[in-house]
Image (tube, rainbow, N blue to C red; front, side, top):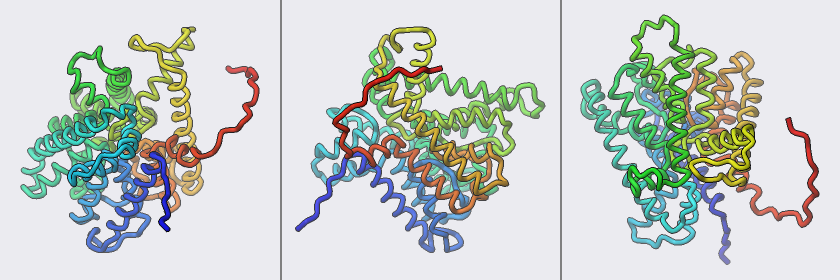
Length: 445
Protein backbone atom coordinates (compact mmCIF):
# COMPACT_ATOMS: atom_id res chain seq x y z
CA UNK A 1 0.00 0.00 0.00
CA UNK A 2 1.45 3.36 -1.03
CA UNK A 3 1.61 6.07 1.59
CA UNK A 4 0.49 9.39 0.14
CA UNK A 5 1.22 12.55 2.06
CA UNK A 6 -0.64 15.68 0.98
CA UNK A 7 1.28 18.89 1.52
CA UNK A 8 -0.01 22.43 1.16
CA UNK A 9 1.75 24.88 -1.13
CA UNK A 10 3.46 26.67 1.77
CA UNK A 11 4.57 23.35 3.27
CA UNK A 12 6.13 22.40 -0.08
CA UNK A 13 8.03 25.70 -0.20
CA UNK A 14 9.20 25.50 3.43
CA UNK A 15 10.28 21.86 3.07
CA UNK A 16 11.90 22.54 -0.30
CA UNK A 17 14.23 25.14 1.17
CA UNK A 18 15.18 22.78 4.00
CA UNK A 19 16.05 20.00 1.51
CA UNK A 20 18.17 22.34 -0.64
CA UNK A 21 20.01 23.66 2.43
CA UNK A 22 20.73 20.15 3.69
CA UNK A 23 21.97 18.92 0.28
CA UNK A 24 24.16 22.02 -0.05
CA UNK A 25 25.62 21.53 3.42
CA UNK A 26 26.47 17.90 2.62
CA UNK A 27 28.18 18.93 -0.64
CA UNK A 28 30.19 21.60 1.17
CA UNK A 29 31.38 18.97 3.65
CA UNK A 30 33.07 16.98 0.86
CA UNK A 31 36.89 17.02 1.12
CA UNK A 32 37.36 18.74 -2.24
CA UNK A 33 34.87 21.54 -1.45
CA UNK A 34 37.18 23.40 0.94
CA UNK A 35 40.84 24.32 0.73
CA UNK A 36 41.72 22.60 4.00
CA UNK A 37 39.78 19.44 3.09
CA UNK A 38 37.66 19.40 6.22
CA UNK A 39 34.71 21.56 7.29
CA UNK A 40 32.64 21.39 10.45
CA UNK A 41 29.02 20.50 9.56
CA UNK A 42 27.59 23.52 11.40
CA UNK A 43 29.88 25.81 9.38
CA UNK A 44 28.78 24.07 6.17
CA UNK A 45 25.13 24.32 7.26
CA UNK A 46 25.57 28.02 8.07
CA UNK A 47 27.11 28.67 4.64
CA UNK A 48 24.45 26.63 2.83
CA UNK A 49 21.65 28.44 4.69
CA UNK A 50 23.20 31.83 4.01
CA UNK A 51 23.56 31.01 0.29
CA UNK A 52 20.11 29.44 -0.20
CA UNK A 53 18.45 32.21 1.81
CA UNK A 54 20.52 34.76 -0.21
CA UNK A 55 21.89 36.38 2.94
CA UNK A 56 25.66 36.68 2.72
CA UNK A 57 26.68 36.15 6.34
CA UNK A 58 29.72 33.85 6.35
CA UNK A 59 31.86 32.06 8.90
CA UNK A 60 34.46 31.15 6.25
CA UNK A 61 35.83 33.54 3.64
CA UNK A 62 34.30 32.48 0.31
CA UNK A 63 37.26 33.42 -1.85
CA UNK A 64 40.02 31.73 0.17
CA UNK A 65 38.48 28.85 2.14
CA UNK A 66 36.31 27.25 -0.55
CA UNK A 67 37.66 25.59 -3.68
CA UNK A 68 36.20 26.21 -7.14
CA UNK A 69 33.82 23.29 -6.54
CA UNK A 70 32.70 24.79 -3.23
CA UNK A 71 32.22 28.19 -4.84
CA UNK A 72 30.12 26.66 -7.64
CA UNK A 73 27.93 24.89 -5.06
CA UNK A 74 27.46 28.21 -3.24
CA UNK A 75 26.63 30.02 -6.50
CA UNK A 76 24.05 27.40 -7.49
CA UNK A 77 22.39 27.68 -4.08
CA UNK A 78 22.35 31.47 -4.40
CA UNK A 79 20.65 31.21 -7.79
CA UNK A 80 18.09 28.66 -6.60
CA UNK A 81 17.41 30.61 -3.42
CA UNK A 82 17.13 33.92 -5.25
CA UNK A 83 14.58 32.80 -7.83
CA UNK A 84 12.91 30.16 -5.68
CA UNK A 85 13.39 26.42 -6.11
CA UNK A 86 9.97 26.09 -7.77
CA UNK A 87 11.19 28.24 -10.66
CA UNK A 88 13.86 25.67 -11.40
CA UNK A 89 11.47 22.77 -10.92
CA UNK A 90 9.18 24.32 -13.50
CA UNK A 91 12.13 24.97 -15.82
CA UNK A 92 12.99 21.26 -15.78
CA UNK A 93 9.35 20.35 -16.39
CA UNK A 94 9.39 22.50 -19.51
CA UNK A 95 12.74 21.12 -20.68
CA UNK A 96 11.47 17.56 -20.43
CA UNK A 97 8.09 18.56 -21.90
CA UNK A 98 6.17 17.57 -18.78
CA UNK A 99 2.75 19.02 -18.06
CA UNK A 100 2.66 22.24 -16.04
CA UNK A 101 -0.09 21.13 -13.63
CA UNK A 102 -2.41 23.15 -11.44
CA UNK A 103 -0.52 22.17 -8.28
CA UNK A 104 2.75 23.41 -9.80
CA UNK A 105 1.06 26.71 -10.66
CA UNK A 106 -0.33 27.08 -7.14
CA UNK A 107 3.09 26.51 -5.56
CA UNK A 108 4.68 28.95 -8.00
CA UNK A 109 2.05 31.58 -7.15
CA UNK A 110 2.95 31.28 -3.45
CA UNK A 111 6.67 31.16 -4.24
CA UNK A 112 6.72 34.57 -5.95
CA UNK A 113 3.88 36.02 -3.87
CA UNK A 114 1.37 36.79 -6.60
CA UNK A 115 -2.34 36.13 -7.01
CA UNK A 116 -2.37 35.90 -10.80
CA UNK A 117 -2.71 32.16 -11.38
CA UNK A 118 -3.77 32.59 -15.00
CA UNK A 119 -0.56 34.40 -16.03
CA UNK A 120 1.90 32.49 -13.86
CA UNK A 121 3.49 30.72 -16.86
CA UNK A 122 4.09 34.02 -18.64
CA UNK A 123 5.49 35.62 -15.47
CA UNK A 124 7.80 32.64 -14.92
CA UNK A 125 9.15 32.91 -18.47
CA UNK A 126 9.88 36.61 -17.94
CA UNK A 127 11.63 35.79 -14.66
CA UNK A 128 13.92 33.25 -16.30
CA UNK A 129 14.75 35.30 -19.40
CA UNK A 130 15.12 38.53 -17.43
CA UNK A 131 17.42 36.86 -14.92
CA UNK A 132 19.58 35.41 -17.70
CA UNK A 133 19.87 38.75 -19.50
CA UNK A 134 20.62 40.87 -16.44
CA UNK A 135 23.08 38.44 -14.86
CA UNK A 136 25.04 37.88 -18.08
CA UNK A 137 25.11 41.63 -18.80
CA UNK A 138 26.36 42.30 -15.27
CA UNK A 139 28.98 39.55 -15.60
CA UNK A 140 30.36 41.06 -18.82
CA UNK A 141 30.52 44.57 -17.36
CA UNK A 142 32.22 43.41 -14.15
CA UNK A 143 34.66 41.30 -16.17
CA UNK A 144 35.88 44.52 -17.78
CA UNK A 145 37.32 45.43 -14.38
CA UNK A 146 38.24 41.96 -13.08
CA UNK A 147 39.92 40.42 -16.16
CA UNK A 148 42.81 42.95 -16.28
CA UNK A 149 43.42 42.41 -12.57
CA UNK A 150 43.01 38.63 -12.25
CA UNK A 151 43.44 37.24 -15.78
CA UNK A 152 40.84 35.81 -18.16
CA UNK A 153 39.76 32.67 -16.29
CA UNK A 154 39.57 34.12 -12.80
CA UNK A 155 38.32 37.50 -14.04
CA UNK A 156 35.38 35.98 -15.96
CA UNK A 157 34.50 33.75 -13.00
CA UNK A 158 34.61 36.74 -10.64
CA UNK A 159 32.40 38.71 -13.00
CA UNK A 160 29.78 35.94 -13.17
CA UNK A 161 29.88 35.13 -9.45
CA UNK A 162 29.46 38.72 -8.29
CA UNK A 163 26.79 39.44 -10.91
CA UNK A 164 24.63 36.51 -9.74
CA UNK A 165 25.31 37.35 -6.10
CA UNK A 166 24.28 40.98 -6.61
CA UNK A 167 21.18 40.23 -8.70
CA UNK A 168 20.00 37.68 -6.13
CA UNK A 169 20.74 40.17 -3.33
CA UNK A 170 23.07 37.62 -1.72
CA UNK A 171 26.22 39.61 -0.92
CA UNK A 172 28.70 36.72 -1.27
CA UNK A 173 32.04 37.80 -2.73
CA UNK A 174 35.35 36.21 -3.76
CA UNK A 175 37.57 39.23 -3.16
CA UNK A 176 38.97 37.90 0.11
CA UNK A 177 41.93 36.63 -1.94
CA UNK A 178 43.44 40.03 -1.17
CA UNK A 179 42.20 40.46 2.41
CA UNK A 180 39.71 37.99 3.96
CA UNK A 181 36.13 39.28 4.42
CA UNK A 182 36.97 42.56 2.66
CA UNK A 183 33.96 42.57 0.29
CA UNK A 184 34.12 45.55 -2.15
CA UNK A 185 36.11 47.92 0.07
CA UNK A 186 38.96 48.07 -2.47
CA UNK A 187 36.44 49.20 -5.12
CA UNK A 188 34.79 51.90 -3.02
CA UNK A 189 35.58 54.61 -5.57
CA UNK A 190 35.15 52.48 -8.72
CA UNK A 191 32.15 53.85 -10.64
CA UNK A 192 31.88 50.79 -12.90
CA UNK A 193 31.81 48.20 -10.10
CA UNK A 194 29.59 50.32 -7.85
CA UNK A 195 27.18 51.18 -10.66
CA UNK A 196 26.78 47.62 -11.93
CA UNK A 197 26.40 46.10 -8.46
CA UNK A 198 23.84 48.72 -7.39
CA UNK A 199 21.85 48.34 -10.61
CA UNK A 200 21.70 44.55 -10.23
CA UNK A 201 20.66 44.84 -6.57
CA UNK A 202 17.83 47.25 -7.40
CA UNK A 203 16.60 45.28 -10.44
CA UNK A 204 16.58 42.02 -8.51
CA UNK A 205 15.02 43.66 -5.48
CA UNK A 206 12.02 45.43 -7.03
CA UNK A 207 10.25 42.16 -7.74
CA UNK A 208 9.17 40.07 -10.70
CA UNK A 209 5.61 41.42 -10.54
CA UNK A 210 6.95 44.93 -11.18
CA UNK A 211 8.92 43.51 -14.11
CA UNK A 212 5.65 42.17 -15.48
CA UNK A 213 4.00 45.59 -15.36
CA UNK A 214 7.03 47.31 -16.91
CA UNK A 215 7.19 44.84 -19.81
CA UNK A 216 3.43 45.09 -20.41
CA UNK A 217 2.91 48.85 -20.06
CA UNK A 218 6.34 50.43 -20.50
CA UNK A 219 6.39 54.01 -19.18
CA UNK A 220 2.59 54.19 -18.82
CA UNK A 221 2.85 54.14 -15.03
CA UNK A 222 -0.85 54.89 -14.53
CA UNK A 223 -1.66 51.41 -15.81
CA UNK A 224 0.64 49.70 -13.30
CA UNK A 225 -0.89 47.75 -10.43
CA UNK A 226 -1.09 49.45 -7.04
CA UNK A 227 1.62 47.08 -5.78
CA UNK A 228 4.03 48.17 -8.52
CA UNK A 229 3.34 51.86 -7.89
CA UNK A 230 3.98 51.49 -4.17
CA UNK A 231 7.12 49.40 -4.75
CA UNK A 232 8.69 51.85 -7.20
CA UNK A 233 7.83 55.00 -5.23
CA UNK A 234 8.83 53.72 -1.79
CA UNK A 235 11.98 52.04 -3.16
CA UNK A 236 13.08 55.40 -4.58
CA UNK A 237 12.26 57.17 -1.30
CA UNK A 238 14.19 54.60 0.76
CA UNK A 239 17.24 54.63 -1.53
CA UNK A 240 17.51 58.44 -1.67
CA UNK A 241 16.47 58.95 1.96
CA UNK A 242 18.82 56.21 3.15
CA UNK A 243 21.73 57.71 1.22
CA UNK A 244 21.03 61.15 2.69
CA UNK A 245 20.89 59.78 6.24
CA UNK A 246 24.07 57.77 5.70
CA UNK A 247 25.83 60.91 4.45
CA UNK A 248 24.65 62.92 7.46
CA UNK A 249 25.69 60.28 10.00
CA UNK A 250 29.01 59.23 8.46
CA UNK A 251 30.43 62.14 6.47
CA UNK A 252 28.74 65.51 7.02
CA UNK A 253 31.02 67.88 8.91
CA UNK A 254 33.77 65.27 9.33
CA UNK A 255 37.33 65.34 7.99
CA UNK A 256 37.25 62.03 6.08
CA UNK A 257 39.96 62.83 3.55
CA UNK A 258 37.49 61.99 0.76
CA UNK A 259 36.06 64.18 -1.97
CA UNK A 260 32.35 65.07 -1.89
CA UNK A 261 31.75 62.74 -4.84
CA UNK A 262 33.42 59.83 -3.04
CA UNK A 263 31.32 60.44 0.07
CA UNK A 264 28.11 60.56 -1.96
CA UNK A 265 28.97 57.35 -3.84
CA UNK A 266 29.72 55.48 -0.61
CA UNK A 267 26.55 56.78 1.03
CA UNK A 268 24.45 55.73 -1.97
CA UNK A 269 26.03 52.27 -2.10
CA UNK A 270 25.50 51.81 1.65
CA UNK A 271 21.83 52.71 1.22
CA UNK A 272 21.27 50.33 -1.70
CA UNK A 273 23.21 47.38 -0.27
CA UNK A 274 21.46 47.62 3.11
CA UNK A 275 18.24 46.67 1.29
CA UNK A 276 19.23 42.96 1.66
CA UNK A 277 22.29 42.80 -0.63
CA UNK A 278 25.16 42.45 1.86
CA UNK A 279 28.08 43.96 -0.06
CA UNK A 280 29.96 46.81 1.58
CA UNK A 281 32.47 49.42 0.43
CA UNK A 282 33.15 50.83 3.91
CA UNK A 283 34.42 49.20 7.10
CA UNK A 284 31.19 48.56 9.01
CA UNK A 285 33.00 47.96 12.31
CA UNK A 286 33.98 51.65 12.23
CA UNK A 287 30.47 52.87 11.42
CA UNK A 288 28.89 55.34 13.85
CA UNK A 289 25.95 54.36 16.04
CA UNK A 290 23.71 56.58 13.92
CA UNK A 291 24.90 54.86 10.76
CA UNK A 292 24.24 51.45 12.32
CA UNK A 293 20.69 52.48 13.23
CA UNK A 294 19.96 53.69 9.69
CA UNK A 295 21.40 50.48 8.26
CA UNK A 296 19.34 48.30 10.62
CA UNK A 297 16.14 50.11 9.63
CA UNK A 298 16.89 49.64 5.93
CA UNK A 299 17.81 45.97 6.47
CA UNK A 300 14.57 45.39 8.35
CA UNK A 301 12.45 46.89 5.55
CA UNK A 302 14.37 45.09 2.80
CA UNK A 303 13.26 44.70 -0.81
CA UNK A 304 9.91 44.10 -2.47
CA UNK A 305 7.51 41.13 -2.61
CA UNK A 306 8.13 38.53 -5.30
CA UNK A 307 11.78 39.50 -5.61
CA UNK A 308 15.21 38.08 -4.76
CA UNK A 309 15.36 40.33 -1.69
CA UNK A 310 14.35 39.74 1.92
CA UNK A 311 13.13 41.90 4.78
CA UNK A 312 9.53 42.68 5.74
CA UNK A 313 9.23 44.19 2.23
CA UNK A 314 8.60 47.74 1.01
CA UNK A 315 4.85 47.13 0.66
CA UNK A 316 4.58 46.09 4.32
CA UNK A 317 6.37 49.25 5.42
CA UNK A 318 4.32 51.37 3.00
CA UNK A 319 0.95 50.00 4.18
CA UNK A 320 1.79 50.61 7.86
CA UNK A 321 3.07 54.10 7.06
CA UNK A 322 0.03 55.01 4.95
CA UNK A 323 -2.41 53.66 7.57
CA UNK A 324 -0.59 55.51 10.36
CA UNK A 325 -0.65 58.77 8.39
CA UNK A 326 -4.36 58.28 7.60
CA UNK A 327 -5.13 57.70 11.29
CA UNK A 328 -3.15 60.73 12.49
CA UNK A 329 -4.81 62.97 9.89
CA UNK A 330 -8.28 61.57 10.77
CA UNK A 331 -8.99 60.23 7.30
CA UNK A 332 -11.81 57.73 6.86
CA UNK A 333 -9.65 55.35 4.84
CA UNK A 334 -6.03 54.74 3.87
CA UNK A 335 -5.78 55.94 0.28
CA UNK A 336 -2.82 56.04 -2.09
CA UNK A 337 -2.62 56.56 -5.87
CA UNK A 338 -6.40 56.90 -6.04
CA UNK A 339 -7.02 53.52 -4.41
CA UNK A 340 -8.10 52.43 -0.92
CA UNK A 341 -5.93 49.91 0.90
CA UNK A 342 -8.10 47.14 2.42
CA UNK A 343 -8.04 46.53 6.17
CA UNK A 344 -6.85 42.96 5.59
CA UNK A 345 -3.61 44.23 4.04
CA UNK A 346 -2.97 46.40 7.09
CA UNK A 347 -3.57 43.48 9.47
CA UNK A 348 -1.14 41.26 7.57
CA UNK A 349 1.45 44.06 7.44
CA UNK A 350 1.24 44.44 11.23
CA UNK A 351 1.59 40.66 11.68
CA UNK A 352 4.71 40.58 9.49
CA UNK A 353 6.24 43.66 11.13
CA UNK A 354 5.88 42.53 14.73
CA UNK A 355 6.62 38.85 14.11
CA UNK A 356 9.95 39.74 12.50
CA UNK A 357 10.69 42.32 15.18
CA UNK A 358 10.02 39.78 17.94
CA UNK A 359 12.32 37.28 16.20
CA UNK A 360 15.09 39.90 16.13
CA UNK A 361 14.57 40.69 19.84
CA UNK A 362 14.59 36.98 20.74
CA UNK A 363 17.70 36.28 18.67
CA UNK A 364 19.50 39.31 20.09
CA UNK A 365 18.62 38.24 23.64
CA UNK A 366 19.91 34.68 23.19
CA UNK A 367 23.14 35.65 21.41
CA UNK A 368 23.85 38.48 23.88
CA UNK A 369 23.46 36.09 26.81
CA UNK A 370 25.85 33.61 25.18
CA UNK A 371 28.37 36.30 24.18
CA UNK A 372 28.40 38.95 26.93
CA UNK A 373 31.71 40.41 25.75
CA UNK A 374 30.27 41.52 22.39
CA UNK A 375 28.55 44.91 22.12
CA UNK A 376 24.76 44.74 22.25
CA UNK A 377 24.40 46.95 19.17
CA UNK A 378 26.70 44.61 17.22
CA UNK A 379 24.60 41.58 18.13
CA UNK A 380 21.38 43.38 17.21
CA UNK A 381 22.95 44.45 13.90
CA UNK A 382 23.79 40.81 13.17
CA UNK A 383 20.24 39.65 13.94
CA UNK A 384 18.66 42.36 11.79
CA UNK A 385 21.03 41.31 9.01
CA UNK A 386 20.02 37.66 9.37
CA UNK A 387 16.22 38.12 9.51
CA UNK A 388 16.42 40.57 6.60
CA UNK A 389 18.63 38.11 4.65
CA UNK A 390 21.10 40.95 4.12
CA UNK A 391 24.54 39.67 5.07
CA UNK A 392 26.09 42.88 6.36
CA UNK A 393 28.14 42.39 9.51
CA UNK A 394 30.23 44.50 11.85
CA UNK A 395 32.73 41.64 12.04
CA UNK A 396 31.36 39.42 14.82
CA UNK A 397 30.04 36.46 12.78
CA UNK A 398 33.23 34.42 13.11
CA UNK A 399 33.52 35.24 16.83
CA UNK A 400 30.16 33.73 17.79
CA UNK A 401 29.74 30.27 19.33
CA UNK A 402 27.97 27.31 17.72
CA UNK A 403 24.60 27.91 19.39
CA UNK A 404 24.64 31.55 18.22
CA UNK A 405 25.35 30.36 14.68
CA UNK A 406 22.34 28.04 14.89
CA UNK A 407 20.20 30.99 16.05
CA UNK A 408 21.36 32.98 13.01
CA UNK A 409 20.64 29.96 10.76
CA UNK A 410 17.04 29.92 12.03
CA UNK A 411 16.69 33.68 11.53
CA UNK A 412 18.02 33.47 7.97
CA UNK A 413 15.67 30.60 7.13
CA UNK A 414 12.61 32.33 8.61
CA UNK A 415 13.60 35.56 6.89
CA UNK A 416 13.70 33.86 3.47
CA UNK A 417 10.66 31.59 3.79
CA UNK A 418 8.74 34.27 5.65
CA UNK A 419 7.95 34.18 9.35
CA UNK A 420 4.20 34.48 8.76
CA UNK A 421 4.32 31.85 6.02
CA UNK A 422 6.20 29.47 8.31
CA UNK A 423 3.66 30.04 11.07
CA UNK A 424 0.94 29.25 8.54
CA UNK A 425 2.69 25.95 7.79
CA UNK A 426 2.55 25.01 11.47
CA UNK A 427 -1.00 26.06 12.24
CA UNK A 428 -2.97 26.03 8.96
CA UNK A 429 -4.70 22.70 9.60
CA UNK A 430 -6.04 23.66 13.01
CA UNK A 431 -9.83 24.04 13.04
CA UNK A 432 -11.34 27.40 13.87
CA UNK A 433 -13.31 27.55 17.12
CA UNK A 434 -17.07 27.20 16.79
CA UNK A 435 -17.70 30.01 19.27
CA UNK A 436 -16.29 33.53 18.86
CA UNK A 437 -15.77 35.62 21.97
CA UNK A 438 -17.68 38.93 22.30
CA UNK A 439 -15.95 42.22 21.58
CA UNK A 440 -15.06 44.77 24.25
CA UNK A 441 -13.51 48.19 23.76
CA UNK A 442 -9.98 48.77 25.01
CA UNK A 443 -8.24 52.07 25.62
CA UNK A 444 -5.33 52.70 23.24
CA UNK A 445 -2.68 55.40 23.56
